[in-house]
Length: 425
Image (cartoon, rainbow, N blue to C red; front, side, top):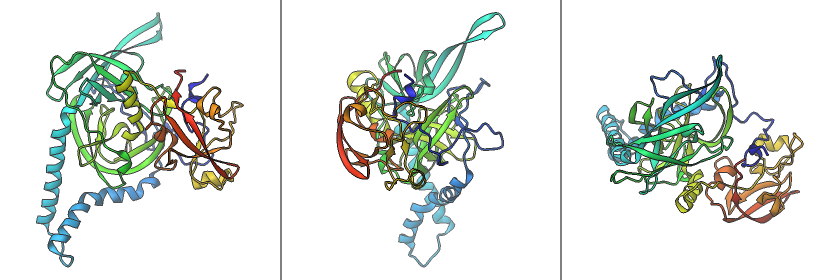
């Protein structure tokens, strides 16, 4: 069975253009995956997407003003509302923010690792099948003292043959295994590594935050192995948006990435898998993609990954919980198109390809979900722009029983479902 049908996905594309679509057109902004390719390698895989500039007009204004927002309020409180903020005060604001970012970088830096990988690819050449080895680089975050590292799936793809990590102090650890990665068509681009031999080095664990508390305009900081050469490069900016869905491609295949944070913090190739942090030094996202357009980067909210983190720490392997439905995320326009009175949720639209939108044998089928049902909440968390179905399910683990509130024929009802591990294919 096509695994695109297995993981919760809005593969049933809405006829309303509410997503960023694939576009190889050169004169339009492109989204590139932060693929792990060293700078001296000229072969860079790219995630390409059409980004409509109008969506970001307001965010540009926010980016200009947000850096001074908190300091401005403090200055007004200190100097009164009648006076203007002097150049000296502005310098103090910038200096204080710089000191804070520097302190956070020192605090979080030791828990950020640079990842080096070797891959072997097979190609058909003039003399038959040929194998070639290449190197790449990315970033990861240490999430427990045993040496588990969180990163992106595309950093350690399935053709990876060896992995090593470099700590912030330059220590190289080369006994590293890939203990799990999400499927290639899973909208959550996540993988986990395990350092098997730390060589006596005490590892520093990152502090994990609550991404649901993040708001547009919040200051954020990104750390990563920029261009595969510059370890623990620190950049800062604001959270420009949330709930972004993008179609991404590396030129040969494409995937859907859902419910992403958007930020104007500079993110570069090699930053994949690195942390996006708040001003408390907490990881609120995992950097995953960047646009060719200025100041547009994307990160996976950390709450979307917490269920997988719990699974890995408890069982030593990655288990992805799923319901087994194909759906369309509702907005005002999509609800109007389908003539629905419910305007937010996950609409299990009838499939156009002849296959049922309810996967056979899945928890959804066992619980009695039907096509045209609308999933509006899970365990009290509403499905909306800020919380997609994939995002909410990411907070749970395989084996958890959840209450799923649905709307069927205009009436609400609640079904109980036991989450199962998503099949691998």
